[in-house]
Every structure is written in structure tokens, then in C-alpha cells.
Image (cartoon, rainbow, N blue to C red; front, top):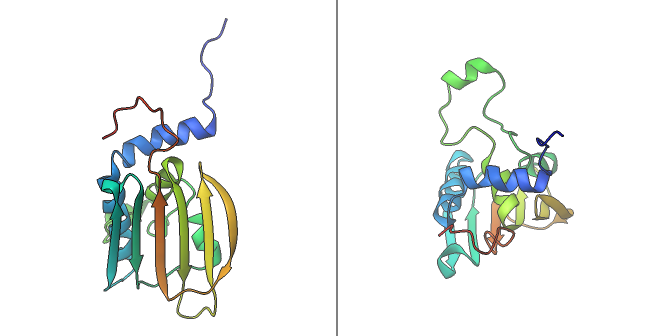
Length: 161
């Protein structure tokens, strides 16, 4: 009898997330690096309950289009690498396209983002790597990402912290 089987996507995503987001501080690092890479010169960080209840990063970077905002939560989706040669030219803090997908696998996520050339921004709500809501919204230029209840889907006995 065969015993090897493919893991369901939600379990595979949570395992992969553990490599990128090991504790709330890992999420803060990833979100702050994204803000810097977006050209922000004003970044606000809000943390509640040592990051377990809330981590929010608000920046005035270039923001994202509606399509880019949705794509940014897919695993290995990145704006920084187009071909293999780009790996040797990376000048940004992040480039693998794993941070937001990992965060969405272990937290409830809300993002509001708008580019300067867009009249309206985009609001996306994600839980367990699934988009719950996506709609246009009024918001300033930049990105406001909020992760709530970090590791709420993980096993309660997991020793994450």
C-alpha cells in the first residue's frame, strides 16, 4: 500500500509559512522591508500583544494596482525577478515572493493600497490563504497592511513563540 500523499494546500502553506514567519518579529521584518522596497519614506508600525493580536504597517510607498495587490499574496509572486540573471542583480531587501503568502497562511490579513495614478485603491481581506473580500476603496497613496491573530490557524500546542 502506498503511503506518500500530497498535503492539502492549506497545510502545505502553513508549513512553508513557518520557514518565513517564525514569530511575529519575522512578520514585522518582512512587512517593513516591503515598505522600504516600495520607496516609502514614512512608515508606521503598530503592534498589539507582542504582535500576536495585531501587526500593522502603514507606508507612503508607491502602492499597488488592483491586480498586483491580489497577486502579491500568491506564493513565489514577485516584482523583483523576471529571469535567472536578475538573481545576481537584486538590490532590494526581499525578492523571493514568499512573505505575503506566508503571512496570509498564518494570520487574518487586510490590505489597503493605492498608487498615485489611481483614483481609488484596493481593499483585500484574506484568511487561511483565501481571499474573503476584494473591493475598491478610498485610501491614501501607499499600503496599509494589517495582520490579526497571528498563528490563529496553527496547532495550539505549537511552540512558535
